[in-house]
Length: 150
Image (cartoon, rainbow, N blue to C red; front, side, top):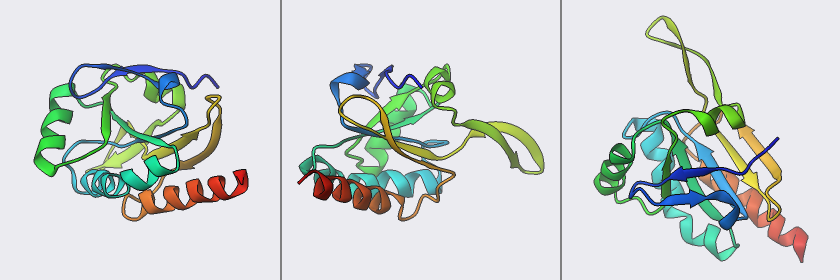
């Protein structure tokens, strides 16, 4: 699977995935919703630890850049959020799927995370994750990778 991508961040600056490897990229459904806020706050709290292990963290949703900017400012987030409004990267990683919302079946974004190694290959993927505690789970895996590299 091709994992390279380019998307605008909340400030409209192009984020080129190959320039930020190794990379933890997490896909989340919607800015400012309870689960997505919790997940973003937890990744923010652990951002320094990810960085100390050499990992960049970026979140991707279908929300606009403006929505991301508001989300970051409202909750004091310290991670990169990328806008995939045309769903190209969501489709590339296969994170869109059928969900039931309010009794209706819709195509939604399935909360998923991918660890991309220095060569851009997927080293680990987490699909259909629960928001609370997920960032710590990913960090623990990254720590294990650092231990294995020694």
